[in-house]
Image 1 (cartoon, one colour):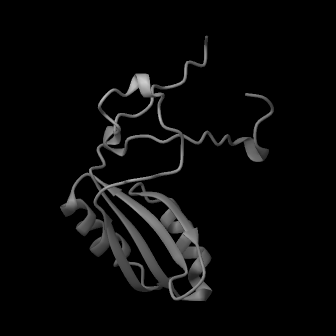
Image 2 (cartoon, helix red, strand yellow):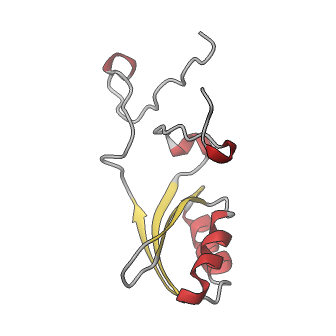
Length: 128
């Protein structure tokens, strides 16, 4: 894999079926955070297992994240108990992801997904 990324991290972009990890409920979260606490809140959220990504943005909502939870009850618990406990989050808007039509990342070759567009691509074979 070569020399790698500075800091020893590698980024291998892949589109993976989230249900393989038990995440059947997804939501996009837009938060308005007190500017003085934006970095602190973003770093805290980056440690939450329920979030696939966290990013700062501009506009009325200055923090965006994607939540992956096992079911709607787990999402509700996460929103009300974990995020609700962070006083620097002034507002929170949630948009459930009901169906993904298009996402970043390559699709598996047509031969490997007959009749099923939701099947994840086969994992790479690094040793061959």
